[in-house]
Length: 307
Image (tube, rainbow, N blue to C red; front, side, top):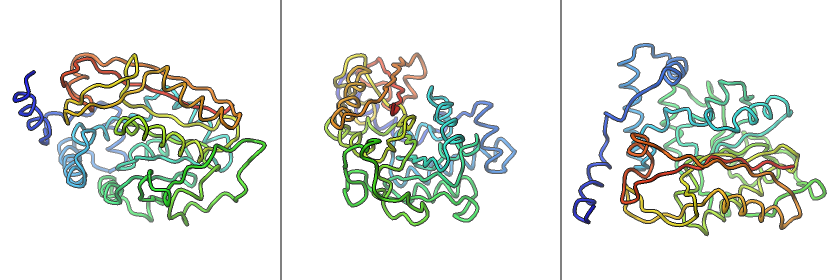
C-alpha cells in the first residue's frame, strides 16, 4: 500500500462506522440486563451514543471498534481463576486499570466478584461518566470507586519494589471509597486487569507500567495481574493500521522474561502464562491496529500469578 493510499485508508478508518456494530447473544443479554433496554434497535441506538460520547473524549480505536461490547475479560483464560480468587479470599481488592466505561468490572461483578472490593481507574473521568450514562447508573446505584489519573505520574502511581511475604506492606488496607490516587493500594491488590493497554506505549514505558503494577500486587500466593494486548511471535515492531506509526510488541517469551525479572529482583517467584493468538479474516480488519502494512496480527493473553 503506497503512502497516499495509506493516508486515505486512515481517514476512512478513523471515522465512526456503524457497520462495525454487532452484539452476540451473550453480549446482547448482558447489556439488556444491565441497561434495562430490551428492544434491539433501542439498545443499538443507546450503545452508538455511548460510543460517540467516549470517542469525543479520546478516539481510541478500541472505542471505535466497539470493544467495550465484547465482554473481553470473561473470555480471557485466567477469568475463572480470577473469579475464584475474588470469591474465596476475604477482602480481595480488584483493580481494573484502563477501564474506560467500566464494562469489564461490571461483567466481573455480574459474575460474582464482590462489588465492595472493586476499584477502577483510567486517565479520563469522562470515560467513567460515559459508563454511568451507558449503564444507566450513578455513584449511588453502582458504588465502585473510580480514580482518574495518569499511571505514569508518581503522584498517582509511584513505582515501589514488589512486596513479599517477608517484606509485606506496612500500611493498612485502604478504604477504597477514600482513594484519591492508587498509591495507598501498594501491596494490597489481589487482582489487576489491564487489557488493550500495554501496547499503546513504547517498550520502556511498558516496563514502567509493569513495575508500577507489580508494586500494587499483594504478596499473598495467588495474587494476579492479567489481560491481553497486541503481540508478536518474536518481539519487535509492527505498523499500526490506524496511526501508521510503528509500535513495539512483546512476544510471549519476552513478556514472560520481563515479569520474571521484575519479581526476581526481590527474590520473589511468579508463574507467567502467555498465549499467542493469531487473528484470522475479519478479525484482523476489526482489530485495534486494523489491516495496516503488516497484515498478520496477533494478541497475547497472559496472567502473572504470585507463588
